[in-house]
Image (cartoon, rainbow over all chains, first blue to last red; front, side, top):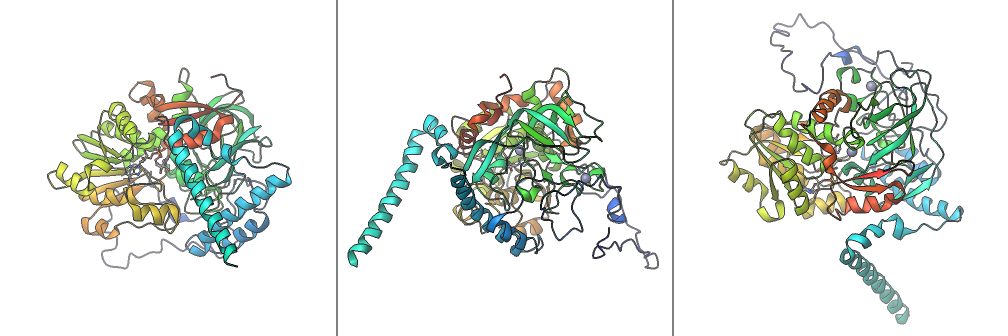
Length: 169
Length: 384
Ligand SMILES: NC(=O)c1ccc[n+]([C@@H]2O[C@H](COP(=O)([O-])OP(=O)(O)OC[C@H]3O[C@@H](n4cnc5c(N)ncnc54)[C@H](O)[C@@H]3O)[C@@H](O)[C@H]2O)c1
Ligand SMILES: [Zn+2]
Ligand SMILES: [Zn+2]
């Protein structure tokens, strides 16, 4: 690993400590049978790695590791405002809210970018179809009507409040 | 090619996307023949998994035909019909070599706390998934498994996730002969966990949900007892009454982040995203299990925090075991179980939906409409 921040300092000799290891019991392994324990991790990041995939698009990587994984997904590289937020998020570790909360924010910004992108390509997203309401129409008409009624009530309420404000002016 | 396209919370559609390409010598391109929608997809669908980018294609449970392979692929060839485990794993890292295929170190750059999963957000590696006509399958020498002669594709596709996950849930629960097992969640995963609990010698299996048609299905399919949590009152009291006050020997959480049943958890976990999903089922599992008992978690939660009674874990001396299923590790045994008729996964499939109607499929499965247990998407190129 070229990145010298990541070191493997493990497995020193502690035999001078009285009683060291006398009760070690390899059978006491709560990971069995999920794991065939070999303790290979003790050697650090030293296995023979798969061929490295060439990086053709921007890939953000966790700062808790030194490199890109040998293989990675290339779908939807970061772009636009959401991409800027995601790049910022990846400056923080997975251990921090400062990583995850901006990512959730970026996801929401990305939805708006998606709608704008649809408009730019001359399509108007068919929300009724995208939300799968066709299925709800087929199998749960009362549920769909209830949903629509709630939306209608909220819209009517909002319109009412807005027009009332106007009256006050 | 046609592919599912995520547009935002609860908005998906079918779109034309470029064909996937070989990007690595160990890649294969697979023409999808079956692709399921999973409870895990609902976390993405609801917008609860951080770094779920608009334009992504979901889908981690699929079978298909290999149509192209990279120069280093030796284990499958063009024309093979394969089932593809949902975990993307290199087979070479310290974790893969210890059979933790759900925890590979060479497939997810974005996060160290999650392995890589097909079509499961950038937090799980940024790969497009199999709810499409074609899909890129990395590490084709490791994951894809040739479907045995005579095996039904519907059985094969459930071996990519539901069967191994349900089985591992029971396995991690450390069930001993005679144990009383409580399974939370009567979705495909919970039903399979209940069924598999018997294979480990359970003495009594109870499954808990609040959707009656699912409980009815579970009762018949997994030959277990089924209870509606909206009818039985306080779960912990119920569990204690059923076990002479001691508690269930093991509890399995097969619900995860979309859990219902507790308003505070639902609001903070699912609506406000103040925690990584609603942890109601896990909370109940911890409080229903006996002292010194085991809680096995396969229900999926997000990467931040959840409100669970960790003090009770301590004071009761519980063991918690959890993971993404290590599909490849379990496949040989589970293929045998399917071939010998011990497990009949395809009976879980209630809906066959054309890929083009993917948005309806998501709504149907997410709102639990039309008595849906498990929906499978069929691409247009596949006859039936
Ligand atoms: N660990 C893994 O490898 C892995 C693999 C696949 C799925 N999963 C996870 O397993 C879980 C279940 O998947 P599924 O496909 O069966 O989903 P599903 O949505 O079909 O089933 C979940 C069920 O839980 C029920 N439920 C909700 N709240 C509950 C509560 N408080 N107590 C009991 N039941 C409750 C729902 O009514 C529903 O029937 C999901 O979280 C999914 O992400 C994990
Ligand atoms: Zn799944
Ligand atoms: Zn690996």
